[in-house]
Image (tube, rainbow, N blue to C red; front, side, top):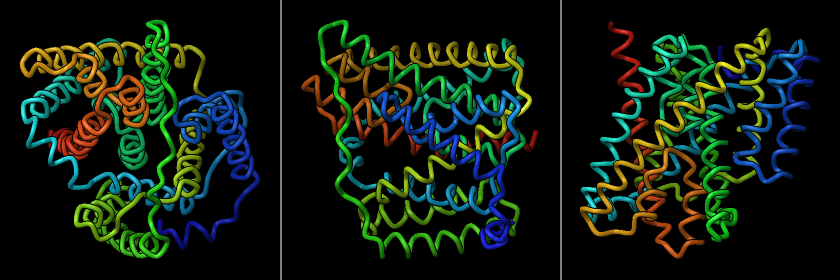
Length: 348
């Protein structure tokens, strides 16, 4: 369905209620200082409402538009800056890529064998990071979005809450990351959005999966890598897009039983611990081989949370740009690998 046609749908009472509940959840999570509040807070609040039996929905046009802007935001991280670190520390990046591949296959195997996931859902749930990208894919793929979202949100919450807590126990204070100041010019954003809309419409017509997400990502990634459209989308646009995405996720949980909820929370904790163990192993190997601080590599290899991990590096007196470059590289690798995994599954 096109964006224009989707917006012609009336914003029903169900949609208005869903967005109101989502906004309330986001506000609570933001007030508590919890991670990615506009996404996780809205998702949790709407999920609870849906499980309690409240009928909620969102217009397709609104959802697609926000997914397009999320894609633009993801693409804005593709800058040539990280290439300097990739050329300076190639072993670190190679080992990171290896741990990502091993992690996806190991976590997918565990989700299928131990928790009864189907292969597509397990593949998406096993991805160590890139939350908005994975959930954007799950919207258009034959995956159980509820299970994927729950496992991925557990990973984000577990990582971002546990690591600072451990550092606090060790006497190290970790503060929130500063808000980005390099906001994109509105004219540049408008041009990107229009070109991305045209590309996404074309991808929809040719039957490409996750067309709205990839349309935004490809156009924005090319523009940022070439240095034509520097900066990130304004914070309020990103927050609104994540709020709608979280609300959309929550609406999918209608009819989800408490037993299913407990099962998938357990799956989320299990694969997060497994992914952290694999990342720690890779980080230890690189730290020994290159003589770099172990804590620097551990934060750089953490499966998710680029903003939180960069802030931790800054507060610990480590190199935040080194950490951020590894996380950007991780996102780029996953952007390439995950669609390849899905295509292979489709062929089989």
